[in-house]
Structures are given as C-alpha cells and as structure tokens.
Length: 624
Image (cartoon, rainbow, N blue to C red; front, side, top):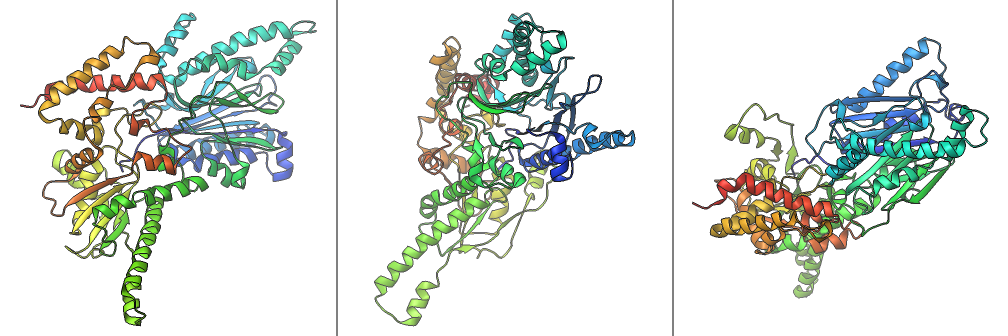
C-alpha cells in the first residue's frame, strides 16, 4: 500500500521512587531516561517527521531549571534529541555536577514521535509544547496523539475567555486551553491553602499537594471532538494521560512500585520493561491515568465512555505486529480473504503462486497461507476418498499437492521521484519493487499477492501491478486484507482528501452520464447539513456508494489501477466489512470503510470534504 502518515506515538514515565534509588539498584540515575529512549525507538513506526522529549526534575532548587526539553526534525530525530541531551549532561558533568544534578535526569519523562496530518511542518509544531511559569504547578508540558475535528470551536472558546491566541495550531490551542483552566484552578486552591498558612512558601506547598489534574482537564476535554490521547506534566509533579471517550486512539500503561509507564502500543512496554502481556493495562475510553506530586497513581473516568470505536487501522497496519492479539488478528485477516481468492482463481490452488507485497502484509500472508493449506488438505481428503485405492503411487500423487509460496516482490530501494514528472515519474516509481524472475510459470500459473490495504491506488498502478505483470502470470490477483477505503479519516490518519481515494474515484466513474446530476444532488445536501445541529448531521456521501454493489466498485477500481497494455487479466479481492468485525471484534472503528463516524465532528468534516471536492472539480465533472 501507499505509506500513510498517521497517528503519532507517545511515551511517558513517572518515577515513584527517588533518583538515588535507581542509581543504587540499577547503577545509574539515568535509568528512566534510557527507558524513554527505548520506548521511543520501539515506536519509530508511528512518527518519522520529528521527535521531542521533556523532563521534569522535582529536586531542582530555586534558581535552577526544573523542566527540560529537546526537539528535532527528520527521520533521525530520536537519535538527535538524545544526543543533544547527552551533550548538555556532559557539559554539566565537566562543571562538577553529580549524576542526579544533571539536566535531563529527573522524575518525569515525556516523549513524542510526530507524523503530521495537517501539512504543517517545522520545529515549532513538534511536541512536547511547554507553558512556562515561575510557579512549578503552573508550568506544563503537553504532547499527544490526536486530531481534533472542532479546533475552530476551541479557538473561539479561548477568544471568548478574553485570550488572544497567536496561532491556530491545535496543540498550542489545547495547551492554552488547559493552561487557562490550570490557572483558574490554582487560583482557587491558593485561596484554600492560604488559610492559616504561616507564609507564601507554605501556601504554595499546600496548594501543590491539593492539585488534582482531573479537575483541570475535565472542563476542557468536554469541549473536544476527535480521537485523542493527551499527555501532560506539571513542574510540581502532576501528570495525566487522557484517552478520548470513543477509544479511537490507543494508550497502554503499566504501574509498579518504581514507576508508571505509558505508551501508544502494548508490546513496546512489554519489551522495554520485560513484562508479560497480561501485566499491561489498556486505558479505557474517557479514562485518565494520573499521578500526584507525591507519586501516587490513580485512574479516573474523566469523560463518559461512548460507543467504543477503537481504530481498526491500528490492527490492520499501524501498530506493531508483535502484539499478541494484533498478530493473531492480522493472520485472521489473511484467512478471511481466502474465499474471495478461491473464487478469483476458480479454486485452482495448486496452479497458483501465492505471495505478499512487502513488508506490512507479511503477517496476513501467513494467515492466508494457513487457511489455503486447510482448504487444500480438505481437497486431498476428498480425492483420496473418491479414489478408493491404497495404491502408493496414486496416494503419493494426491498428497503431493501443496500451496506454492514465493517471495515474488522485493522492496528494493526508496526512489526519489520528485525530480521528474509525468511518464518519467511513473517509470521510476515502477522500480520501487523488484521481482523474483522465474518464480511463476509464464502463462500457466496464477499469481496472488496480498497487501494490507488499498488507499489511493497510485502505488498499485505505478508500481505493483506493472512489475508483477512482468512475470506473465495467467491471472494476477491483488488482495487487500482491509475492506474498500471509501471515506476520509479526520482522527489522525492522513486520508482527509476524499478525491484521492481510489474507491471514491471508482464510484464517480460508475456514475457515467448521471455524474453531474448525482454529484450536484449530494453537494446540495451537504451544504444543507451546515444549518443542522451537530447531532442531526448525516454522511451525505453514502448516497454515492448506495447506487452500486461492492463488486461493481471493485471492478471499476481494478480498471483504474491496471496500467495500459497489461497483458494478463487483473482482479482485486477485498476483505468484507463483516469479516473485519468478526476478526477484530474489539476494534470496530470503521468510518473509513463504512462512513459511520463516531463523533459529530467527523460527520461534519466528511460533508465538508465532499463540498471541497465538488467545488474544486466541478469544471471536470460534466461528461462532454
């Protein structure tokens, strides 16, 4: 599939023991810093545009920094930020600082890996974001894996409070919103803590002990619409990790006597902390994991849990396949497409070579292979029964049938195609994959290649179909372990342009001479949706797909992704939505397949995406 930019990765560590404890037990006070590095590296798949980390040192005396941060851009950002931190630590060591006094040796760590889904880039957009104050409790670092669908409303609420936001960047606005709530809350606590307090220093100490971040974030979070995991830390030792009430974005944690650890993926914590699967907890929808200044940990239901809509793309593609359940589900997705494959090859398992498009579809391939073996074994058993003989040669001939697997496609190099255009660009793209010549008997064998999903279809047309067709199979079958991606995503995946989706383009093509009238009707209904209350809005784009069967859309997609002059017949097999739900029962967030967005903001934005498409493309819509 085309590489998608998608939801980011987060990591957080809150120590529950003094730094001296880790220096004595593990030989270094940098123990947690080293763990943060591993947590981030193990989630490198979630963000390769930039990375950042923040550290809070609770033991810092007045006059010295208590919150540190490093950020960097690029695929090597993780290495860069830790190298920069090491440089600062080395400089402090040369000046005589002890290990526990070094910068970036602290009690709270926050890490972030960024993939932009908004098109904004640059160091200023890389998390964590900081809000500085001379008061430790009012100083805050914030990062998240999120995409809010109502950022304009959040902006307006800040303006209504009398603020003047200097940017519309979503993380900045959330930081200011939470920061404003924190200021108001601290002001109230200050009044409570000041009663009978001997001096201002004691008042602040009491205030910090009373601080509960759930009271700060709850009024803010109730205004958010979207998929999110938001992490925050104050300079006085409070931390929070809050998951959206629909459970769209993932978050996992482990708490022991030494520390609390949070990450976007379960096996990351398992590997880094050497834990078994069952010792990792999943943060529930609307739930927050919080720590107080004294290191005590609690979970609080900050937002009422809504209908669970955990992102199914996490299971299909984004998350690491080393997770126990994801590995099993991806194999299940491979098995789930076998009936469609058998139909496409007329049941001829032995006359077909099976392979996968590297590298993300490999686990689904194993599941497909196992199911094909089961089907072939059933065929062998029937043949033996029908033969009714124990002749060794006959039995051996029947048992010799096997599922033929080959590594047909090899991802050779990452080509830079930006220097060329048009047909030259397509020619270069066609060499991203190499093929194993001689792995298919020309004109005799079918060739089946499984991929994890088909989004825009450009990689299929420019590269995969073109290069696999060079093997001259009798028939080429491309298999998607995911259903047809028909709708944009607005919760963190880079799929917001509806016009780029191959399933949408196929449905538009199928309209034929009715195209202008049908699209205009959808456009008018989408415009009318703007006047409706948020809870009354519906997805107007569904009307486009309701005109056609799944097979009709698949057939048109096949035509669109098959390059001209392709000699062998090409067909595409998709996973069914019903099979996806059966295989991934706890991750039923399927809006990019079904159009059933879990939040009002999603419904609004899908209609706005169609409006933008129509107004941009209307001059080409009419059939001449």
